[in-house]
Image (cartoon, rainbow, N blue to C red):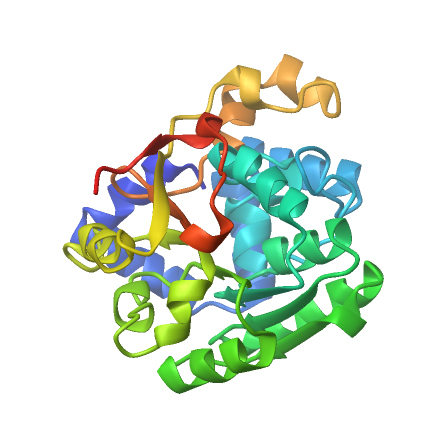
Length: 291
């Protein structure tokens, strides 16, 4: 479903009620109905998944095998295209170059970063937290397919005590990768977890869900970290991996661009925060935040 269509449904109470009724239908009814209503969209999704064989076709994690959840395989094809969070590709390469011994991934979801970093960083161990248990078997299976299951530990919902334990296990100088839909404001608090002062962090912030989240995190870390703020930009045809999927780019260019839509509300922001003891981030990723 196109993002604009979903936004229109969300804004209409009758349409939303009809959608909820549709979601209650059994799968063998929903699937043909989905194809009937949006044949071009579903054909494009099927083409990408089928042509790729479930492997990421471009970007820093090219070649990684993913087992996407049903929702992601229809609405977040950027994972397979390799365009997901394109703005962070330079940061991803910087993280890989730094060679962290441990990465703590809070909010593993489909495993894009946990498995991706494990593949690109063969000496790195990943501690992953994911609060939705339905994701766990998919991530574990994909980790096995990529040959990195021995270096990924998957745990459930992450609270302050869990983060404390993980930081005790990994020691200073680790990286925390956090995307937890607004929960970052409560979790990432150096006054509660002093070891955060010695860790690097890449955090997706969610001011649309928790007011003032970004500013609060900047204030908490600006004395101990160098902070880069990175903003999302709209996808264009130039971002699509046309060389890998030429038929889609040529025959349905508008759909190709829409497949990269990450379905965000407002302007997405990330904070890349490196502890002063590990300073030296290249300027090409964004502008340092004023202290």
